[in-house]
Length: 68
Image (tube, rainbow, N blue to C red; front, side, top):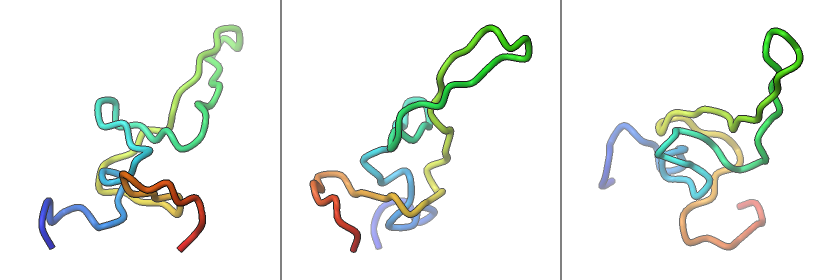
């Protein structure tokens, strides 16, 4: 296997939904988060590491939306 040996073939770092600049997963819309005061809100994407993985992996260049 070529490339980074610390990354599995279906890891976040190899996924089309991974935003490497901010280490975020963009598979789903951002989640609204409230500050401690309950008034101020903002939205965030989940932070992930390139070596992590989930069941939503999609490789770059794939337009297949079905499960394999």
